[in-house]
Length: 428
Image (cartoon, rainbow, N blue to C red; front, side, top):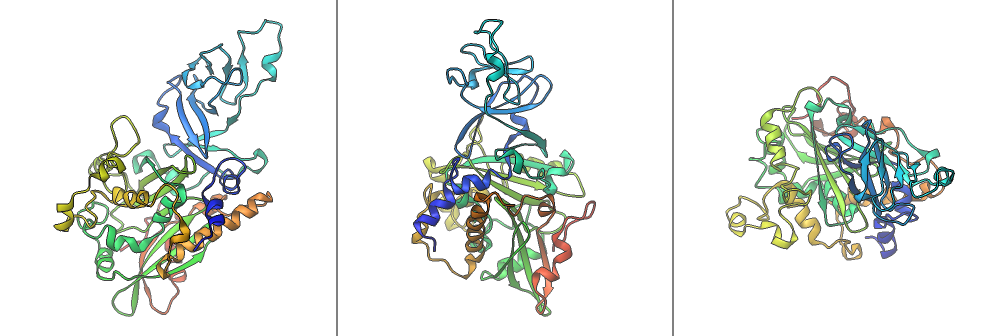
């Protein structure tokens, strides 16, 4: 159980907070590349870690991420003109390039050198895996670029979505490392879900609803092993990767299905972006898989048209169907694996009072993740290296494997837990 003070330290992410300082030490998934589809397209509002920002793609295709409010009279650059290599404020015409340099100041006389002295706050951006990433921390501590497996695959092998979730990022992320809920919250949907159906591991998961958990630290985060009984002196292990500070890789069901992954990124202290990724390292995603993903199935969600807000939400009780709940078509009555998760996570409130929790043995991963984040925040405050900021920390996979009962899971699954380019992942 956390104290109130520890809970506050975990969920407050504005600049100057402990967690805000830590999270700014990593490359951050900021927005989908599709949100800036072409050079000189309209700018987009972005909010990350409590900061109001504007993203734009300039004439040469470069991406800029600037403080939203113009350095002149603090008008919003959302209303600016994206033209001729920069974003021009609609109020007085001050113009900024992607690095935040003021490149034109028509309101000042030609001989003025004021333009040279103005620097709009800006963050560097890179585009990888259909995502625009930004770094918001000290320049001298900038880490290696994100090297998650899905971010380096051909576009034909990856599908990425995001949705706004009405909770702090910790609340959402903890759902991603809570393997025990799968046997209940999603119990009646596994057979129909295209990412789970027809796999041997599903039978073990449904047969043993009381998994035993073992959690060990990895270089970049945690290895979370959920152990269920199997045959012939073996255990069925589903091993989740948690990578600092907010990534998860979901244990697969069969190598014919894509892998799944998430990132949970704070918008502010009470909302976050829940990123969902399906990918396969050795083949293109099929049209049937892509259609299901675009329709919000599996780990993705249905949207209110024209937004990244979910169609099922608190205002409509997540479209709960009590008859479907009675008929065992859905354990909670909410349709869709993603909605089943976020409906329950949001039901706790935007910032849950963790002093009211009563954690058990199945919550070991949540306990250790909190401890590791709090410890890393103390490390970041000193300017020291933080876990999970190296490319090697990202080159990992989750796995679903049978391991002899006498062998520790991290040893028995060691080969399956690292990325081997051009090779399939391990799953039953």
